[in-house]
Image 1 (spheres, rainbow, N blue to C red):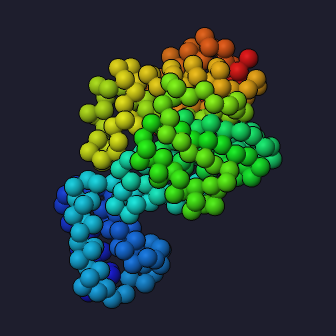
Image 2: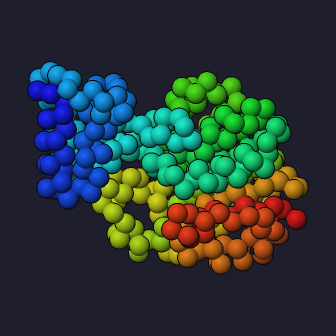
Image 3: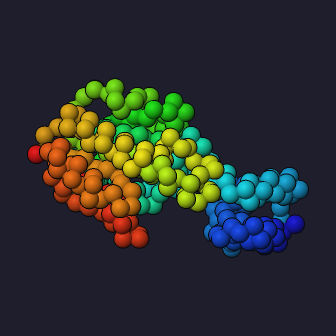
Length: 279
């Protein structure tokens, strides 16, 4: 069978099962099996595919029909121009988080800084920052041993394991070091809202990395409180927050002695990140 027909057939099947990005997903999944780029596959869609590849393709399309995210099926997600290994123990990196990294990298350009990433997951935030800040180093902590294993693999893949360390730690018990930058994308979805998230998220992504407690602020409070002790004077705290949380988090930061330097809006014009400094 030609790749063109296989893609068309898969796309129709996904469309029937209400997968919005049916054509894109069909192309990505076949290109991943073939080990070529999606662009290459589009240009060379007259490639003949073997029975073995056709069966593999059928299997992954069946997984996508069940709403499993593309990133978990392929085992990777592009973020900050790199492919990060992800699985069901780690959240899938979102494009909005790149806004936070862009600001941090611009602020600390050419400086050697020490970074703490709280709730590191796949390690994508810390690794992306130190990839660009070549004199810097950092540590990523997470309560999930499985997530830390993934972060360590990503650090080795990017040749950053000498500058990035990853440890299993509960934020409540972490007391090591002083940092120029503390960054965190903590769980911030209010408990009652989790059920309203799309099925791709609720069925597959780790609940522990989503659940921010009753008001969504449980972990954000802990990050801010810990940062008052772990951040160097004039250090930066960069934190990602959920929709409609800006005013509460902003007040929380003020009460804990932080001055807001910057706020970043996501593509839907919600405040997604707050960058502040310790007074």
